[in-house]
Image (tube, rainbow, N blue to C red):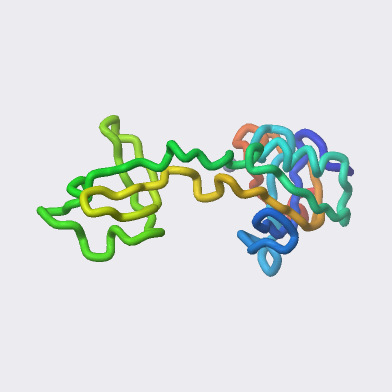
Length: 168
Ligand SMILES: [Zn+2]
């Protein structure tokens, strides 16, 4: 059985920033393998393209460019926001506006955004709304732990319900 459309694919992988020497972002090693349904748009297209046709036990190592992952950083997504916006009952909560803090914000339409405090001025704060992974190439390495047919319910839901041993 090989990795192809409508297979439930289970992998162990390590994701690092930019290349094999980069900081580890996440890893399934020491945990259950990560399972997904191949070919239904659940994963980044480049991730799937690099696994296509692999068999159980095969290894992989590849890089997905930032532009094909979470996008390049966009300097216009760093926005100046007046400090008073952050006031709660007339004052800014201590520790809120520190560089690097993640701040949940809601716009006039009620949409939620996470912003990261980029810099703090006297009257205003620059908040960075870029995705935290923007501008970072993704380096994946690992192996195929198992492959099985996905069942119709899994395909309909767009995610796996069982491991690869429990359901063959
Ligand atoms: Zn489900």
